[in-house]
Length: 206
Image (cartoon, rainbow, N blue to C red; front, side):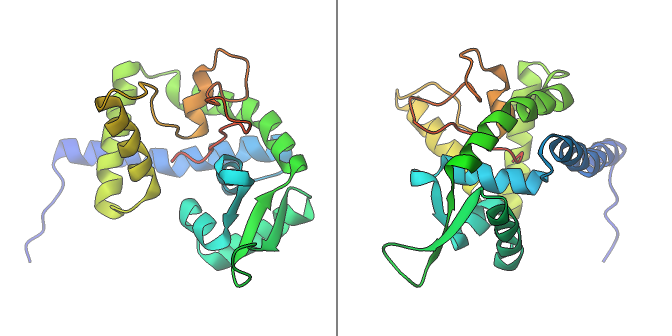
């Protein structure tokens, strides 16, 4: 098979993407560890629970939303449980299923931490971009993600919101990572609670 080398433009784009995906997680990890002694993955797990109904998810679904194996997730949830932020309990509808639940203490910690995390995401990523850059970043990111995992929950989340907008529904952009909330003007942790009793606190970048 003949080699299909990258063009100069493709090589520059690839190297920029590689550098970004190498540096960004470690930068956000360092900030979260300084603030709360947690990792970006820990934050994402807590944020996924904060957005779920009753702040609970089956461990298998939480693993899917965290792009993690059950074994890795179990290790992290055990650590978060020891800090009083998460509880693991049998499902009320199926005792064979274990659910992870965000505790009031975990939600309070996450709400406070979201303020500085969103500020860090904004200063690291979005302050240097204009509106078209942000739209292009989302478009390209989703296109690459669709080729890797067409069933990824982020894709269905965004497509549902887009379909609602086309049909004359809400014009609000889909809820995304904590970075989405950086433009908050209402004084809430994320600026987009949509009337929910729970703040929307996604944090992976995803």
